[in-house]
Length: 533
Image 1 (tube, rainbow, N blue to C red):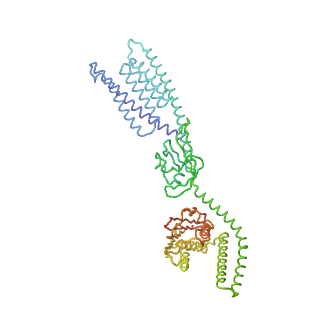
Image 2: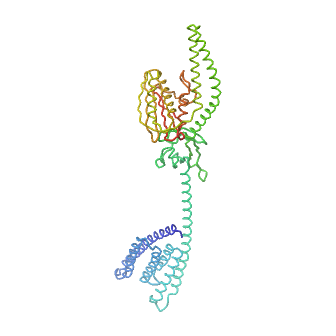
Protein backbone atom coordinates (compact mmCIF):
# COMPACT_ATOMS: atom_id res chain seq x y z
CA UNK A 1 0.00 0.00 0.00
CA UNK A 2 1.30 3.45 -0.87
CA UNK A 3 2.43 5.59 2.07
CA UNK A 4 -0.22 8.22 1.32
CA UNK A 5 -3.01 5.61 1.18
CA UNK A 6 -1.73 3.93 4.36
CA UNK A 7 -1.68 7.26 6.14
CA UNK A 8 -5.22 8.06 5.04
CA UNK A 9 -6.45 4.62 6.23
CA UNK A 10 -4.74 5.06 9.61
CA UNK A 11 -6.31 8.49 9.99
CA UNK A 12 -9.77 7.10 9.16
CA UNK A 13 -9.30 4.24 11.67
CA UNK A 14 -8.28 6.76 14.32
CA UNK A 15 -11.49 8.72 13.81
CA UNK A 16 -13.64 5.57 13.98
CA UNK A 17 -11.96 4.51 17.22
CA UNK A 18 -12.77 7.87 18.79
CA UNK A 19 -16.44 7.71 17.82
CA UNK A 20 -16.89 4.05 18.86
CA UNK A 21 -15.24 4.75 22.20
CA UNK A 22 -17.81 7.49 22.77
CA UNK A 23 -20.55 5.09 21.62
CA UNK A 24 -19.42 2.52 24.22
CA UNK A 25 -19.58 5.16 26.96
CA UNK A 26 -23.05 6.20 25.86
CA UNK A 27 -24.21 2.55 25.80
CA UNK A 28 -23.03 1.71 29.32
CA UNK A 29 -24.43 5.02 30.62
CA UNK A 30 -27.86 4.16 29.25
CA UNK A 31 -27.51 0.66 30.69
CA UNK A 32 -26.60 2.02 34.10
CA UNK A 33 -29.46 4.49 34.11
CA UNK A 34 -31.98 1.91 32.93
CA UNK A 35 -30.90 -0.59 35.53
CA UNK A 36 -31.05 1.97 38.31
CA UNK A 37 -34.53 3.03 37.25
CA UNK A 38 -35.76 -0.57 37.09
CA UNK A 39 -34.44 -1.55 40.51
CA UNK A 40 -35.78 1.64 42.04
CA UNK A 41 -39.31 0.91 40.78
CA UNK A 42 -39.07 -2.71 42.04
CA UNK A 43 -38.43 -1.48 45.56
CA UNK A 44 -35.29 -3.55 46.03
CA UNK A 45 -32.02 -2.31 47.48
CA UNK A 46 -30.53 -0.35 44.58
CA UNK A 47 -26.92 -0.76 45.67
CA UNK A 48 -27.13 -4.47 46.52
CA UNK A 49 -29.12 -5.50 43.44
CA UNK A 50 -27.08 -3.61 40.84
CA UNK A 51 -23.63 -3.72 42.44
CA UNK A 52 -22.16 -6.22 39.91
CA UNK A 53 -23.53 -4.23 37.00
CA UNK A 54 -22.21 -0.98 38.46
CA UNK A 55 -18.81 -2.61 38.76
CA UNK A 56 -18.86 -3.51 35.08
CA UNK A 57 -19.95 0.01 34.12
CA UNK A 58 -17.22 1.53 36.29
CA UNK A 59 -14.60 -0.75 34.75
CA UNK A 60 -15.86 0.21 31.30
CA UNK A 61 -15.51 3.89 32.16
CA UNK A 62 -11.94 3.36 33.35
CA UNK A 63 -11.02 1.35 30.28
CA UNK A 64 -12.57 3.95 27.99
CA UNK A 65 -10.59 6.65 29.74
CA UNK A 66 -7.33 4.74 29.28
CA UNK A 67 -8.32 4.01 25.72
CA UNK A 68 -8.92 7.73 25.06
CA UNK A 69 -5.46 8.53 26.46
CA UNK A 70 -3.93 5.90 24.16
CA UNK A 71 -5.77 7.41 21.19
CA UNK A 72 -4.22 10.81 21.95
CA UNK A 73 -0.80 9.25 21.26
CA UNK A 74 -1.95 8.46 17.70
CA UNK A 75 0.11 5.25 17.60
CA UNK A 76 -0.67 1.59 16.90
CA UNK A 77 -4.22 2.20 15.55
CA UNK A 78 -4.76 -1.44 14.43
CA UNK A 79 -3.65 -2.83 17.78
CA UNK A 80 -6.04 -0.44 19.52
CA UNK A 81 -8.80 -1.54 17.14
CA UNK A 82 -8.31 -5.20 18.12
CA UNK A 83 -8.26 -4.17 21.78
CA UNK A 84 -11.50 -2.25 21.23
CA UNK A 85 -13.17 -5.36 19.76
CA UNK A 86 -12.00 -7.52 22.65
CA UNK A 87 -13.22 -4.93 25.16
CA UNK A 88 -16.67 -4.81 23.55
CA UNK A 89 -16.95 -8.61 23.81
CA UNK A 90 -15.72 -8.54 27.41
CA UNK A 91 -18.27 -5.88 28.40
CA UNK A 92 -21.04 -7.85 26.71
CA UNK A 93 -19.96 -11.02 28.53
CA UNK A 94 -19.92 -9.26 31.90
CA UNK A 95 -23.34 -7.67 31.40
CA UNK A 96 -24.85 -10.98 30.25
CA UNK A 97 -23.31 -12.80 33.21
CA UNK A 98 -24.93 -10.48 35.79
CA UNK A 99 -28.28 -10.11 34.06
CA UNK A 100 -29.40 -13.71 33.55
CA UNK A 101 -26.79 -15.61 31.54
CA UNK A 102 -28.44 -17.21 28.50
CA UNK A 103 -31.79 -15.68 29.47
CA UNK A 104 -30.33 -12.13 29.58
CA UNK A 105 -31.95 -9.51 27.40
CA UNK A 106 -28.49 -7.99 26.83
CA UNK A 107 -27.14 -10.80 24.68
CA UNK A 108 -27.53 -8.38 21.77
CA UNK A 109 -24.43 -6.57 23.08
CA UNK A 110 -22.35 -9.36 21.49
CA UNK A 111 -23.84 -8.46 18.09
CA UNK A 112 -23.02 -4.78 18.73
CA UNK A 113 -19.41 -5.83 19.31
CA UNK A 114 -19.43 -7.73 16.02
CA UNK A 115 -20.83 -4.71 14.18
CA UNK A 116 -18.25 -2.48 15.80
CA UNK A 117 -15.51 -4.87 14.71
CA UNK A 118 -16.71 -4.75 11.10
CA UNK A 119 -16.79 -0.97 11.24
CA UNK A 120 -13.23 -0.82 12.53
CA UNK A 121 -11.50 -3.60 10.59
CA UNK A 122 -14.07 -4.55 7.97
CA UNK A 123 -14.27 -8.33 7.27
CA UNK A 124 -11.31 -9.17 9.50
CA UNK A 125 -12.83 -7.28 12.40
CA UNK A 126 -16.23 -8.93 11.93
CA UNK A 127 -14.69 -12.44 11.88
CA UNK A 128 -12.49 -11.77 14.91
CA UNK A 129 -15.39 -10.27 16.86
CA UNK A 130 -17.70 -13.18 15.90
CA UNK A 131 -15.18 -15.82 16.97
CA UNK A 132 -14.60 -14.02 20.27
CA UNK A 133 -18.34 -13.62 20.85
CA UNK A 134 -19.19 -17.27 20.11
CA UNK A 135 -16.27 -18.56 22.15
CA UNK A 136 -16.98 -16.28 25.11
CA UNK A 137 -20.71 -16.99 25.05
CA UNK A 138 -20.14 -20.78 24.95
CA UNK A 139 -17.73 -20.53 27.85
CA UNK A 140 -20.22 -18.46 29.87
CA UNK A 141 -23.09 -20.84 29.24
CA UNK A 142 -21.27 -24.16 29.41
CA UNK A 143 -18.75 -23.47 32.13
CA UNK A 144 -20.21 -20.83 34.43
CA UNK A 145 -23.99 -20.68 34.01
CA UNK A 146 -25.81 -22.62 36.74
CA UNK A 147 -27.97 -24.95 34.64
CA UNK A 148 -31.50 -25.26 35.85
CA UNK A 149 -32.54 -28.91 36.18
CA UNK A 150 -29.20 -30.01 34.83
CA UNK A 151 -30.24 -29.25 31.27
CA UNK A 152 -28.17 -27.21 28.87
CA UNK A 153 -29.91 -24.29 27.11
CA UNK A 154 -29.21 -25.77 23.68
CA UNK A 155 -31.89 -23.71 22.01
CA UNK A 156 -30.41 -20.46 23.33
CA UNK A 157 -26.95 -21.57 22.34
CA UNK A 158 -28.07 -22.38 18.81
CA UNK A 159 -30.16 -19.25 18.35
CA UNK A 160 -27.61 -16.86 19.79
CA UNK A 161 -24.62 -18.54 18.13
CA UNK A 162 -26.40 -18.49 14.77
CA UNK A 163 -27.32 -14.85 15.30
CA UNK A 164 -23.67 -14.02 15.99
CA UNK A 165 -22.48 -15.79 12.85
CA UNK A 166 -25.23 -14.34 10.65
CA UNK A 167 -24.52 -10.88 12.01
CA UNK A 168 -20.81 -11.37 11.31
CA UNK A 169 -21.49 -12.54 7.75
CA UNK A 170 -23.86 -9.66 6.99
CA UNK A 171 -21.69 -7.05 8.71
CA UNK A 172 -18.53 -8.26 6.96
CA UNK A 173 -20.28 -8.16 3.57
CA UNK A 174 -21.61 -4.67 4.14
CA UNK A 175 -18.26 -3.53 5.55
CA UNK A 176 -16.38 -4.83 2.51
CA UNK A 177 -18.86 -3.19 0.18
CA UNK A 178 -18.44 0.02 2.11
CA UNK A 179 -14.65 -0.28 1.93
CA UNK A 180 -14.67 -0.91 -1.81
CA UNK A 181 -17.03 2.00 -2.30
CA UNK A 182 -14.78 4.17 -0.20
CA UNK A 183 -11.72 3.08 -2.15
CA UNK A 184 -13.46 3.83 -5.44
CA UNK A 185 -14.58 7.18 -4.08
CA UNK A 186 -11.06 7.92 -2.86
CA UNK A 187 -9.65 6.96 -6.27
CA UNK A 188 -12.25 9.14 -7.98
CA UNK A 189 -11.44 12.02 -5.67
CA UNK A 190 -7.74 11.52 -6.34
CA UNK A 191 -8.36 11.48 -10.10
CA UNK A 192 -10.57 14.53 -9.81
CA UNK A 193 -7.92 16.31 -7.73
CA UNK A 194 -5.28 15.41 -10.32
CA UNK A 195 -7.48 16.60 -13.19
CA UNK A 196 -8.34 19.77 -11.29
CA UNK A 197 -4.66 20.42 -10.56
CA UNK A 198 -3.77 19.79 -14.21
CA UNK A 199 -6.57 22.10 -15.36
CA UNK A 200 -5.46 24.76 -12.87
CA UNK A 201 -1.85 24.42 -14.01
CA UNK A 202 -2.79 24.69 -17.68
CA UNK A 203 -5.08 27.67 -17.16
CA UNK A 204 -2.57 29.46 -14.97
CA UNK A 205 0.34 28.76 -17.34
CA UNK A 206 -1.16 30.08 -20.58
CA UNK A 207 0.11 33.46 -21.69
CA UNK A 208 -3.40 34.71 -22.51
CA UNK A 209 -5.63 36.21 -19.88
CA UNK A 210 -8.75 34.25 -18.90
CA UNK A 211 -11.68 35.56 -16.89
CA UNK A 212 -14.90 33.67 -16.23
CA UNK A 213 -18.21 35.19 -15.20
CA UNK A 214 -21.31 33.63 -13.69
CA UNK A 215 -24.84 34.14 -14.97
CA UNK A 216 -25.18 37.37 -13.00
CA UNK A 217 -22.01 38.86 -14.51
CA UNK A 218 -19.83 38.38 -11.42
CA UNK A 219 -16.18 37.37 -11.70
CA UNK A 220 -15.55 33.75 -10.72
CA UNK A 221 -11.97 33.27 -11.95
CA UNK A 222 -9.01 35.27 -13.28
CA UNK A 223 -5.71 33.56 -14.14
CA UNK A 224 -2.20 34.91 -13.55
CA UNK A 225 -1.79 36.24 -17.09
CA UNK A 226 -5.08 38.09 -16.69
CA UNK A 227 -3.82 39.60 -13.44
CA UNK A 228 -0.61 40.77 -15.11
CA UNK A 229 -2.42 42.32 -18.09
CA UNK A 230 -5.25 43.96 -16.14
CA UNK A 231 -3.21 44.95 -13.09
CA UNK A 232 -5.94 43.44 -10.88
CA UNK A 233 -5.86 40.60 -8.34
CA UNK A 234 -8.15 37.59 -8.62
CA UNK A 235 -8.95 37.49 -4.90
CA UNK A 236 -10.07 41.14 -5.04
CA UNK A 237 -12.41 40.48 -7.98
CA UNK A 238 -13.93 37.10 -7.13
CA UNK A 239 -17.67 37.43 -6.56
CA UNK A 240 -17.80 41.09 -7.63
CA UNK A 241 -19.53 42.51 -10.74
CA UNK A 242 -17.27 42.43 -13.80
CA UNK A 243 -18.68 45.52 -15.50
CA UNK A 244 -16.35 48.11 -13.91
CA UNK A 245 -13.27 46.31 -15.28
CA UNK A 246 -14.36 44.21 -18.25
CA UNK A 247 -17.21 46.21 -19.76
CA UNK A 248 -15.27 46.65 -23.03
CA UNK A 249 -15.41 42.90 -23.73
CA UNK A 250 -18.45 42.46 -25.94
CA UNK A 251 -19.69 39.01 -27.07
CA UNK A 252 -18.02 37.85 -30.26
CA UNK A 253 -14.95 36.27 -31.78
CA UNK A 254 -11.57 37.89 -32.43
CA UNK A 255 -12.37 41.44 -31.46
CA UNK A 256 -9.99 44.21 -30.43
CA UNK A 257 -10.38 47.10 -28.05
CA UNK A 258 -8.24 49.73 -26.39
CA UNK A 259 -8.42 49.88 -22.60
CA UNK A 260 -6.57 51.36 -19.65
CA UNK A 261 -5.55 48.81 -17.02
CA UNK A 262 -5.41 49.33 -13.27
CA UNK A 263 -1.84 50.71 -13.59
CA UNK A 264 -3.02 53.40 -16.02
CA UNK A 265 -1.35 51.81 -19.07
CA UNK A 266 -3.15 52.09 -22.41
CA UNK A 267 -3.27 48.62 -23.95
CA UNK A 268 -4.52 47.20 -27.22
CA UNK A 269 -6.27 43.93 -26.35
CA UNK A 270 -7.52 41.20 -28.63
CA UNK A 271 -10.25 39.06 -27.10
CA UNK A 272 -12.91 36.43 -27.65
CA UNK A 273 -15.97 36.23 -25.42
CA UNK A 274 -18.07 33.07 -25.47
CA UNK A 275 -20.87 31.57 -23.33
CA UNK A 276 -20.33 28.80 -20.79
CA UNK A 277 -22.86 25.96 -21.05
CA UNK A 278 -23.59 23.36 -18.37
CA UNK A 279 -24.05 19.63 -18.90
CA UNK A 280 -27.75 20.06 -19.42
CA UNK A 281 -27.25 22.76 -22.03
CA UNK A 282 -28.18 25.58 -19.65
CA UNK A 283 -26.34 28.90 -19.74
CA UNK A 284 -24.15 29.15 -16.62
CA UNK A 285 -22.07 32.22 -17.47
CA UNK A 286 -19.45 33.41 -19.93
CA UNK A 287 -15.69 33.47 -20.37
CA UNK A 288 -13.27 35.88 -22.03
CA UNK A 289 -9.84 35.00 -23.39
CA UNK A 290 -7.77 38.13 -24.03
CA UNK A 291 -4.22 38.93 -25.12
CA UNK A 292 -2.10 42.07 -24.93
CA UNK A 293 -1.55 43.05 -28.58
CA UNK A 294 0.06 46.40 -27.80
CA UNK A 295 3.60 45.31 -28.61
CA UNK A 296 2.47 43.29 -31.62
CA UNK A 297 0.59 46.22 -33.13
CA UNK A 298 3.59 48.48 -32.42
CA UNK A 299 5.82 45.97 -34.17
CA UNK A 300 3.47 45.89 -37.14
CA UNK A 301 3.62 49.68 -37.29
CA UNK A 302 7.42 49.57 -37.19
CA UNK A 303 7.49 46.97 -39.95
CA UNK A 304 5.16 49.05 -42.08
CA UNK A 305 7.29 52.12 -41.44
CA UNK A 306 10.42 50.18 -42.39
CA UNK A 307 8.77 48.99 -45.58
CA UNK A 308 7.83 52.56 -46.46
CA UNK A 309 11.37 53.73 -45.73
CA UNK A 310 12.80 50.95 -47.88
CA UNK A 311 10.63 52.13 -50.75
CA UNK A 312 11.71 55.70 -50.15
CA UNK A 313 15.34 54.60 -50.16
CA UNK A 314 14.99 53.01 -53.57
CA UNK A 315 13.39 56.18 -54.92
CA UNK A 316 15.93 58.42 -53.21
CA UNK A 317 18.96 57.26 -55.22
CA UNK A 318 17.36 58.12 -58.52
CA UNK A 319 15.73 61.26 -57.14
CA UNK A 320 19.04 62.65 -55.92
CA UNK A 321 20.64 62.24 -59.31
CA UNK A 322 17.63 63.60 -61.18
CA UNK A 323 17.25 66.67 -58.99
CA UNK A 324 20.74 67.65 -57.87
CA UNK A 325 22.31 67.86 -61.31
CA UNK A 326 19.56 70.13 -62.75
CA UNK A 327 19.63 72.19 -59.57
CA UNK A 328 23.38 72.68 -59.87
CA UNK A 329 22.99 73.72 -63.51
CA UNK A 330 20.19 76.14 -62.70
CA UNK A 331 22.13 77.68 -59.82
CA UNK A 332 25.27 78.02 -61.96
CA UNK A 333 23.42 79.67 -64.84
CA UNK A 334 21.63 82.09 -62.55
CA UNK A 335 24.93 83.04 -60.91
CA UNK A 336 26.43 83.76 -64.33
CA UNK A 337 23.46 85.85 -65.41
CA UNK A 338 23.43 87.79 -62.15
CA UNK A 339 27.16 88.43 -62.39
CA UNK A 340 26.87 89.96 -65.87
CA UNK A 341 25.96 93.35 -64.39
CA UNK A 342 23.21 94.12 -66.92
CA UNK A 343 20.28 93.36 -64.60
CA UNK A 344 18.06 95.92 -63.04
CA UNK A 345 16.94 95.89 -59.39
CA UNK A 346 13.79 93.88 -60.12
CA UNK A 347 15.63 91.28 -62.17
CA UNK A 348 18.30 91.03 -59.47
CA UNK A 349 15.59 90.37 -56.84
CA UNK A 350 14.07 87.61 -58.97
CA UNK A 351 17.46 86.00 -59.42
CA UNK A 352 17.96 86.03 -55.63
CA UNK A 353 14.59 84.30 -55.20
CA UNK A 354 15.57 81.59 -57.70
CA UNK A 355 18.89 80.97 -55.96
CA UNK A 356 17.26 80.88 -52.53
CA UNK A 357 14.57 78.41 -53.60
CA UNK A 358 17.12 76.25 -55.41
CA UNK A 359 19.20 76.13 -52.25
CA UNK A 360 16.09 75.24 -50.25
CA UNK A 361 15.23 72.47 -52.68
CA UNK A 362 18.80 71.12 -52.49
CA UNK A 363 18.56 71.13 -48.70
CA UNK A 364 15.26 69.22 -48.89
CA UNK A 365 16.84 66.59 -51.13
CA UNK A 366 19.79 66.28 -48.74
CA UNK A 367 17.54 65.79 -45.71
CA UNK A 368 15.42 63.32 -47.63
CA UNK A 369 18.51 61.29 -48.46
CA UNK A 370 19.65 61.37 -44.83
CA UNK A 371 16.26 60.12 -43.73
CA UNK A 372 15.73 57.37 -46.30
CA UNK A 373 19.29 56.05 -46.34
CA UNK A 374 20.40 56.27 -42.68
CA UNK A 375 23.87 55.31 -41.58
CA UNK A 376 24.01 52.72 -38.77
CA UNK A 377 24.79 54.28 -35.38
CA UNK A 378 28.42 54.19 -34.22
CA UNK A 379 27.94 53.36 -30.56
CA UNK A 380 30.24 54.60 -27.85
CA UNK A 381 29.68 55.30 -24.18
CA UNK A 382 28.35 58.85 -24.18
CA UNK A 383 27.14 61.22 -21.48
CA UNK A 384 23.80 62.20 -22.99
CA UNK A 385 23.52 65.20 -20.65
CA UNK A 386 26.80 66.62 -22.00
CA UNK A 387 25.72 66.17 -25.63
CA UNK A 388 22.45 67.92 -24.80
CA UNK A 389 24.29 70.76 -23.04
CA UNK A 390 26.52 71.33 -26.07
CA UNK A 391 23.49 71.30 -28.36
CA UNK A 392 21.75 73.86 -26.16
CA UNK A 393 24.78 76.18 -26.27
CA UNK A 394 24.79 76.16 -30.07
CA UNK A 395 21.00 76.38 -30.32
CA UNK A 396 20.93 79.43 -28.01
CA UNK A 397 22.77 81.40 -30.73
CA UNK A 398 20.38 80.30 -33.48
CA UNK A 399 17.92 82.99 -34.69
CA UNK A 400 15.04 80.56 -34.08
CA UNK A 401 15.81 80.72 -30.34
CA UNK A 402 16.08 84.50 -30.12
CA UNK A 403 12.82 84.94 -28.21
CA UNK A 404 12.81 81.59 -26.40
CA UNK A 405 13.91 81.02 -22.82
CA UNK A 406 15.73 77.72 -22.37
CA UNK A 407 15.36 76.05 -18.97
CA UNK A 408 17.74 73.09 -18.71
CA UNK A 409 17.81 70.54 -15.89
CA UNK A 410 20.57 68.07 -16.72
CA UNK A 411 21.99 65.11 -14.81
CA UNK A 412 24.72 62.86 -16.16
CA UNK A 413 23.47 59.70 -17.86
CA UNK A 414 25.90 57.52 -19.80
CA UNK A 415 24.57 55.13 -22.47
CA UNK A 416 26.10 53.54 -25.59
CA UNK A 417 24.96 55.65 -28.54
CA UNK A 418 26.11 57.60 -31.59
CA UNK A 419 26.71 61.14 -30.25
CA UNK A 420 26.38 62.78 -33.68
CA UNK A 421 23.01 61.15 -34.37
CA UNK A 422 21.77 61.88 -30.85
CA UNK A 423 22.86 65.50 -31.28
CA UNK A 424 20.76 65.60 -34.46
CA UNK A 425 17.79 64.28 -32.48
CA UNK A 426 18.13 67.00 -29.86
CA UNK A 427 18.54 69.75 -32.46
CA UNK A 428 15.40 68.67 -34.34
CA UNK A 429 13.36 68.55 -31.13
CA UNK A 430 14.61 71.98 -30.02
CA UNK A 431 13.92 73.46 -33.46
CA UNK A 432 10.45 71.90 -33.46
CA UNK A 433 9.73 73.35 -29.99
CA UNK A 434 10.97 76.81 -31.02
CA UNK A 435 8.75 76.73 -34.12
CA UNK A 436 5.80 75.68 -31.93
CA UNK A 437 6.25 78.79 -29.79
CA UNK A 438 5.91 80.68 -33.10
CA UNK A 439 8.09 83.70 -32.31
CA UNK A 440 6.27 84.69 -29.12
CA UNK A 441 8.24 84.77 -25.87
CA UNK A 442 8.03 81.29 -24.48
CA UNK A 443 9.86 78.58 -22.59
CA UNK A 444 11.48 75.34 -23.62
CA UNK A 445 12.14 73.07 -20.66
CA UNK A 446 14.84 70.49 -21.26
CA UNK A 447 15.64 67.68 -18.79
CA UNK A 448 18.01 64.73 -18.79
CA UNK A 449 18.35 62.11 -16.07
CA UNK A 450 19.36 58.47 -15.68
CA UNK A 451 16.47 56.01 -15.76
CA UNK A 452 17.41 52.56 -14.58
CA UNK A 453 20.46 51.60 -16.61
CA UNK A 454 19.47 53.97 -19.44
CA UNK A 455 18.67 57.63 -19.89
CA UNK A 456 15.52 59.73 -20.25
CA UNK A 457 15.44 63.09 -22.04
CA UNK A 458 12.43 65.44 -22.04
CA UNK A 459 11.84 68.47 -24.28
CA UNK A 460 8.70 70.45 -23.41
CA UNK A 461 7.35 73.73 -24.78
CA UNK A 462 4.48 76.00 -23.77
CA UNK A 463 3.19 76.51 -27.32
CA UNK A 464 -0.33 75.86 -28.60
CA UNK A 465 0.07 72.09 -28.43
CA UNK A 466 -0.76 69.46 -31.04
CA UNK A 467 -4.27 68.79 -32.25
CA UNK A 468 -5.55 65.32 -31.18
CA UNK A 469 -6.22 64.42 -34.82
CA UNK A 470 -2.59 65.18 -35.73
CA UNK A 471 -0.94 63.23 -32.87
CA UNK A 472 -0.99 59.80 -34.58
CA UNK A 473 0.68 61.26 -37.70
CA UNK A 474 3.42 63.55 -36.41
CA UNK A 475 6.16 60.96 -36.98
CA UNK A 476 5.08 60.19 -40.54
CA UNK A 477 7.47 61.41 -43.29
CA UNK A 478 6.40 64.64 -44.99
CA UNK A 479 3.56 65.28 -42.52
CA UNK A 480 3.79 68.88 -41.30
CA UNK A 481 1.47 71.63 -40.11
CA UNK A 482 4.00 74.42 -40.72
CA UNK A 483 4.17 76.41 -43.94
CA UNK A 484 7.97 76.16 -44.16
CA UNK A 485 8.27 72.65 -42.71
CA UNK A 486 9.52 69.63 -44.64
CA UNK A 487 7.84 66.98 -42.49
CA UNK A 488 11.13 65.11 -42.03
CA UNK A 489 12.37 66.45 -38.69
CA UNK A 490 10.32 64.29 -36.32
CA UNK A 491 10.45 61.36 -38.76
CA UNK A 492 14.25 61.52 -38.60
CA UNK A 493 14.10 61.70 -34.80
CA UNK A 494 11.92 58.59 -34.74
CA UNK A 495 14.26 56.72 -37.10
CA UNK A 496 17.39 57.51 -35.06
CA UNK A 497 15.74 56.62 -31.75
CA UNK A 498 14.49 53.33 -33.23
CA UNK A 499 18.00 52.54 -34.50
CA UNK A 500 19.26 52.94 -30.93
CA UNK A 501 16.57 50.62 -29.55
CA UNK A 502 14.92 53.47 -27.66
CA UNK A 503 11.43 54.88 -27.51
CA UNK A 504 9.91 58.30 -28.04
CA UNK A 505 6.60 59.41 -26.60
CA UNK A 506 4.66 62.63 -26.97
CA UNK A 507 2.02 64.08 -24.68
CA UNK A 508 0.09 67.18 -25.68
CA UNK A 509 -3.10 69.06 -24.96
CA UNK A 510 -4.34 71.93 -27.13
CA UNK A 511 -3.30 75.21 -25.54
CA UNK A 512 -0.92 73.59 -23.05
CA UNK A 513 2.14 72.80 -25.15
CA UNK A 514 3.74 69.49 -26.02
CA UNK A 515 6.22 67.22 -24.22
CA UNK A 516 8.52 64.80 -26.05
CA UNK A 517 10.18 62.09 -23.95
CA UNK A 518 13.05 59.97 -25.29
CA UNK A 519 14.27 56.86 -23.48
CA UNK A 520 17.59 55.35 -24.50
CA UNK A 521 18.44 51.88 -23.18
CA UNK A 522 21.74 50.75 -21.76
CA UNK A 523 22.05 48.25 -24.62
CA UNK A 524 20.88 48.59 -28.17
CA UNK A 525 17.80 46.34 -28.11
CA UNK A 526 14.42 46.46 -29.71
CA UNK A 527 12.02 49.21 -28.69
CA UNK A 528 9.84 48.21 -25.78
CA UNK A 529 6.87 50.33 -26.71
CA UNK A 530 5.53 52.17 -29.68
CA UNK A 531 5.17 55.95 -29.76
CA UNK A 532 2.02 56.94 -27.98
CA UNK A 533 0.08 60.08 -27.73
